[in-house]
Amino acid sequence: MKIKSEHVVYMKNAIDKYIEANGGIKVFIEKYETGDFPNSDVAKNLNTRFCFDMLYRSDLLSWVCESIYPYADDNHILTALKSILPKLTRRY
Image 1: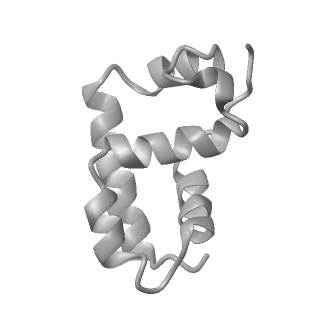
Image 2: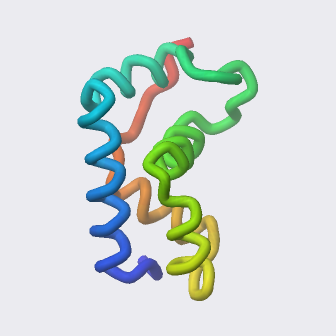
């Protein structure tokens, strides 16, 4: 993984904090797996959408731009996010 381990930990902590403040991971798994999120009908890859939604909702966008984009791209970020978040199964 190209993302530095300390950056993965930072992302994990921010995402975990957001998830716990909003009902816990089971709530998000249920919503995403059943298509109960905005524009679910056009989401081509559920897991990619879930990962980047959690990154964005955790208020990490500006931090990613400053700290990660100088040395990595979206593919590397997605790999890190997949290591943090559960894999989902589309049920809709």
